Each structure stands twice: as C-alpha cells, then as structure tokens.
Length: 383
Image 1 (tube, rainbow, N blue to C red):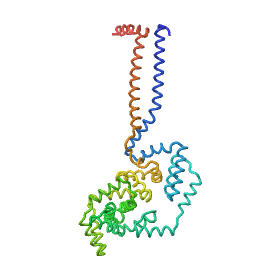
Image 2: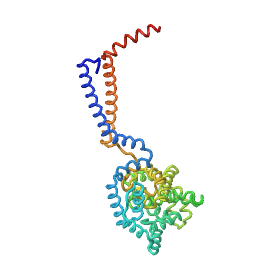
Image 3: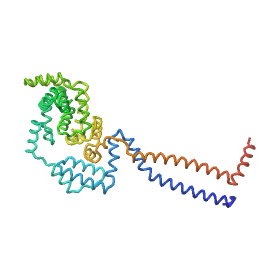
Image 4: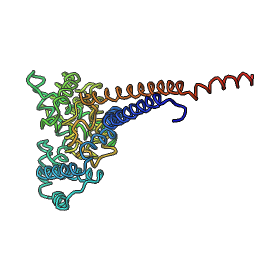
C-alpha cells in the first residue's frame, strides 16, 4: 500500500487477521448459543399463554419428522389398545397440524373403534345412574342425570356425611363436591340451565375423585377447601331430613352445607371443568385433573381447549403439566440464558475494542496525519 511503511503494513495485516479470526469465532459461538437461548426466552414470554407455551414445547417433541412420526404412531396404537379412540383421534389431529403422516391402517382402526354399541351404551347409562360410576361417556351421562336430579349427590352426601358427623374417616372431597353439587343443581333448575356447565364440571370432578384419578396436589387442595367450607349443623339437618325420607327438606338443608365463599370457589372450578367437558369429553377432563395441581391449572387447560380442543388430549399426553405452566427453569435453561448474556457482553466488548483499534490505525496512517493540519488551515481560512 503506497505511503505506508512496510512494517506498518505487516502489522496491519496481522491485526486484520486476528480480527477476522475473532469475528469468525464470535459468529460460531452465536450460532451455537443463539437458537437454544432464544427458545428459552420465548418459553418465558409464553408463560401465561398455554396455547403458545404448548406450541413451543410440542415443536421439541414432534418437530423432527422421523421422530415425530414414530412417536405419534406409537401413541395411537397405545390409545387404541386402551380402548380410548378419542385420544387416538386427538393424535391424528395433532399429526395433521405438524405435517406428520398417519398410516391408513391406523385410521381404519380408529373408525372401527368409534362404531356405537347401543346395548352396551344403555347398560352403561343405567349403571352410571344407580351407582354413580362414570367410566365411559354413557355411564357418565347416567351419573350426571342422577346428580342433576339430586339423587346422586344425596346418596354421596348421606354416605360420607354420616362419617363426618360421627368423626370417622371421611372423603371430604366427595362430601364437599356433593354438597356444592346440590346447591348448583337448585341453581340450574332456577336459572333454566345457566348453571349447567358448573354443575356438569363438579360431577366430573366428583367422579374423578371417587376413582382416585385426581393428582395428589389437586386432591389435597380440594380437601382443604371442603374441610374449611363445610357447615356441620346444616349437614346434620340435611341428614336428619333424609332419614325421614323428606327429600325436599334434605335438598333445602344441603344447599347450605357449603359456606358461600367455598361454594364460589368450587363453582368456578366446576365451570372450567364443564367447559373442558363440552370440548374434550369426560376422559379429556380426567386427563387434565390427573396433571393439574390447582384450580388455576384447570382454568389454563380450559383456555387451551378454547383454541385447541381437538389436539388438547394428545398435547397433554405428550407434555403433561408442561402444556399448561412453564414450571421451574431447568439448570440447562438457566445455563443457556447465562450463555446468551455472556455472549452479548462479549460482543459489546469486541465492538468497543474494534472501534479503538480502528481509531488508532487511522491516527497512525501518514496520509491521515498530514491531512489534519491541512484541514485545520482550511477551517482557519474560512473563519
């Protein structure tokens, strides 16, 4: 380069070589650190949006076509083997959303599993009404009719209420839900069905509780709400009326067994569960109740079902509670976030040092140094 001493030119080339090597190293580090760290940031940003959160996490599970297709096929086979065609259909919908192919043979098996059996359906309906068993959609419909009419809840209230009044070991969740259900049944009839979603939701939750299908955390939380909300004198009055076969008086007294604050909390929970039932069926609600730790989780699942009803069950099967809440950040996630912060600091320091180096290079160039006095004289002349 003309006008630049050979030694300075060699130093400049060596410096440029070091800069190019440093820039390449920083770029490679960015390629390694950037994507996983940004993914963790997106998860944090979606913490309060179940739909966005589950979409991000599903990408990790079914995003790779080969792995996703194998996993979906295995889950469909498992659902069909368990007699759960609704879950299998949910996986078909999830596969369609992610461009995963489902074998025609599996689709045919799902269609065959959905064919109704009228005799079995009627038997299950009657069994659900009399016993309160809720295994299957037909049995649940029978149990729900029993609860709405007051028969099922009075049966459960009498069975568990006598134990509670006598100081014996009691299923307080079933007791509290039965009492709240009686109050909501009265509201359902009075409001011409407006309270039906909450009434339905409580019936599903009660059935899951009796089947020991609630998550331990949710069962414990509902037990605390019931224990704090039950009114012993009102329960004793209801049981006394039931003993005299005065069902009208029993229902009237049972409406006050759960105190208003507790009834509101149970009604809100029942409303979310009822929304889930209308979109995913009884098995979908039970799937949520098995992973939910509190009423907030059930509400998040209801919000997720509002936009992703057909894929909700498959999403929960793959992600569990991770579809609803962010949860605690893993050590890996924290490590990636710290790595991104360190990378940003290193990038800023590199830019600063490059600016200093460039400034020193320009000051040392002979042409640049001679141009400064000339520029100064030109400015003085203008002034």
